[in-house]
Image (cartoon, rainbow, N blue to C red; front, top):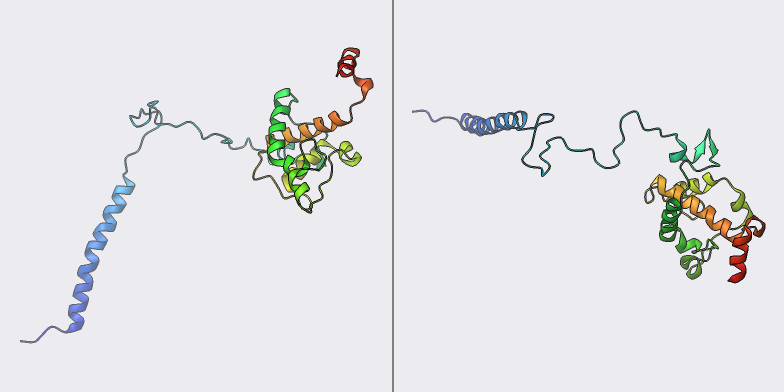
Length: 198
C-alpha cells in the first residue's frame, strides 16, 4: 500500500488549522455587529439617572457654533490687537485673573508685576516690568497674545491656560498697572481722605 506523501499531509493539516480560525472570525463579526445597545430615549438600569442618552461632555462645542477667528480665541479684531475685553469686566473676573496670574505669571513677573519674581531673582533671567510705559499703553489684546504665543524666552501658555482665563489675566495685569500709576485727581474726596488716613 502506497504511503501518502508528506506534501499531501502538510496541506491537509494546514486546511484543518484554518477551519477553526475561520469559524472564530465569523463568530466575532456576528457578536460585534449585533452587540446590545440602547436606542435614543431608552431607559437604562446601568446609570443612576436611568437615562441611556448621556449629557454632552463638559466644554463640548456644537457643530457650526465655533468661530476660530473670534476675538475671544485670537485676541485680535480684524487682524489688529483687541483694545477691549471680549467679556464683561467684573470683580469676579479680576479675582479669577489674580489667582491665575499668581499661579502662572508671578514666579517670573512678581506679585506686583515689577519683574522681580522668584525665578527672575534666583536666575540670570531679566524679566521686563509690566509697568513700563510701552506695556501700560499697549492694547489689552497684546497680553492675551503673549500669553497665548509666548515671546522671547517666555513660552506659550496656550496649553495650560484656557482662553477665558488668559483674558482674566490680561484684565488683572491692566488692574495691576492702574494700581501703580493711579492719578490722585481721579479719586473722589472720600477716597483721598481714606488714603490720607493710611
